[in-house]
Amino acid sequence: MPDVALPIPDAGSAGAAALAAALEQRSIVLVGMMGAGKSSIGRRVAARLGIAFVDADVEIEEAAGMSIAEIFAAHGEPYFRAGEARVIARLLDHGPQVLATGGGAFMNEQTRANIRDKGVSVWLKAELDVLTRRLRRRNDRPLLKTADPVATLANLLAERDPIYGEADVMVMSREIAHDLIVGEIIAAVSSKLGVAA
Image (cartoon, rainbow, N blue to C red):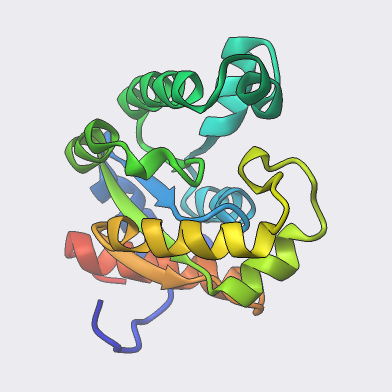
């Protein structure tokens, strides 16, 4: 994405309304690492646009009747990933919406294809130090239950960042007010869709 300052629509503005209309049945799909803020920022993007917010991880837990950590423990990661891909494919049929995906969801080639067909993907990119600070406050991430969670996180970043780079747009998640990042996402998606902000 070029380093240009894009005008940021205000809440309830004509720009936000124009983007919501331009989405038609497409979803804004937030991808990126655990801890990037996809759920918290996604809720605000949806509120600004006046469309639904859906968290794929919550939908997976409701469908399975157990937490993601429990799914990993009982059935393993491949089982979880297969279910995740099915749930996201189903959710993409219900746009317009803002859809937050789990950190590993975009690694699935079919999921990426489904998102390209029915959505606009936004890579919410966060640096390792930001992710480390945020994830230290939580202990519910199965992939980080290792002897060295920071090294594990760094390895995941190195593996996933090139794939996340296939997203339609990229916005940096950093320690600033969430509303500023929300505005940047709306401006970037508007630009991608040719909507005047």
